[in-house]
Image 1 (cartoon, rainbow, N blue to C red):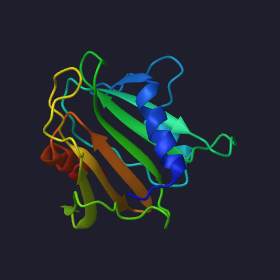
Image 2: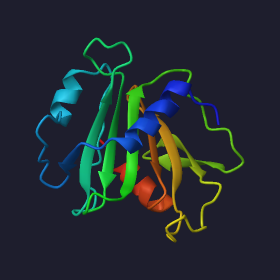
Image 3: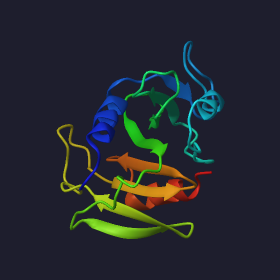
Image 4: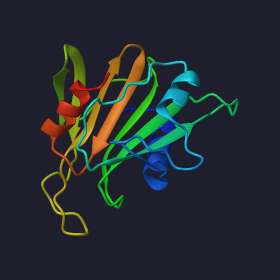
Length: 169
């Protein structure tokens, strides 16, 4: 799969530093930025799912490569009810021609409300992780309204990921 190194670094950062926000009530932690504030500081359309399980919480990440105050990339991390497991991560940035179709024998084209999306199952999908939990999901990417969106999960199924993608507005 061909992805810019910056995006891979961002994904690593997205998984490592949470700022928790309740998804159901959209309660934000003390210094946390809101979705509305993010929309004012990016040059791409921010899309969010209009429905996720009620017991998930949301942590929002922002990244600025130029250090000018505006953000180049954001990450929406939906956690389980105890904020101990990442259920799904949704990275977003301005659509760029360098973001291509994942190149893997595991990649399948999928339909997201009439938009071409690409799903790549994890190479170890169906196996157990080091905690004895099933590895599910994979990497789902698509472009919508000038925004590149990359969703990943190892805890929910391909179908659940596509269902969430179809609810993003």
